[in-house]
Image (cartoon, rainbow, N blue to C red; front, side, top):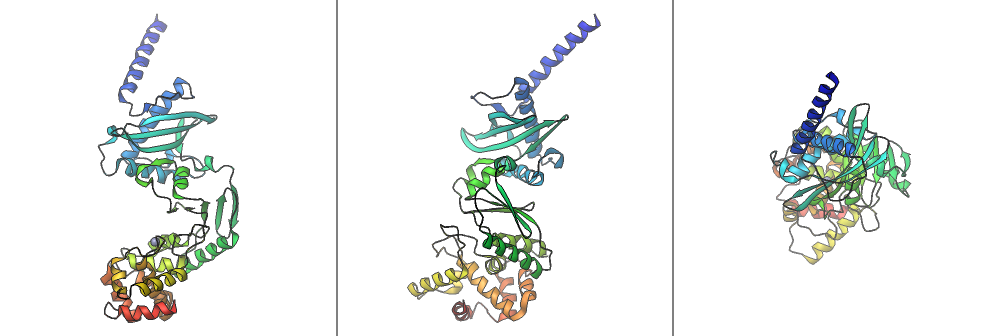
Length: 379
Ligand SMILES: [Zn+2]
């Protein structure tokens, strides 16, 4: 009799749990079939429901993630909140997360593809790996799975991950800049994992953002430094521009001065963008292009180009950053790395920038055109 009572109780409870789950699920199944048992499907949906809710409430931590890139996974999952829901913390229900794909990769490890729709439009498609092990559920971005056949090469402090080839002279240059930039700012150079990618969409795919409507047209940007990890575009081994920004943020006490930060990034690092062959656009090339521009626009004011920053180059390189980098070189010639440190820490805005630049070089907004034409000749 007792066993029958327990059985009835169990059935009632099971029915209630299933019903409650069905009522509260945010994640819906897509129209395609899923390659997992009904129990696993339900477990995945319940786990994703809970995980997404905690992401939105910013309550995820290191116990939620697994794998070699666990810290990067945590960083990416934390970013989901802003990519999908933005600043609106009440719109979780309106995004209709839908489970598109679910299949096993190995024992207890499942591949999930999850779409977020807003008003019938695809907003985001996430790829998430879920592990069920020893009563614990953990999540990971697909980086290690998608790059499992890639080669590894250690160059100085950096471990490169790449599918086919590596340019060792560029990798060696990056290692040299890594050490030198850190030293000039009084910091210790750090170790990095560096993934050689071809474009920004490839990077997003590795990070689990299989489709991100806000960055759908972006192919030219790399990603990093995030949790010791860097992703380049056009397979370029030298990510020193953004590495400088990373070190600069660690060094500064004041808020960032963008002209100073970009200027030093162009000087110590590089102008960030590559040509179609993957070779970094050099500052020397940009100085020549600015010379051509001035020859065709003799009335142009260099101060106006600095202040308004119009797009005058064939690439996405910035004339304001180029002019600032020439000034930074002048500061370093006169006052060494200490002068650069003072400029980087001058506080935000052009007024603070020219206060330190004027003190260290004599360049002001009044004599800018004349002084900069002389610096352009020096290149
Ligand atoms: Zn920059």
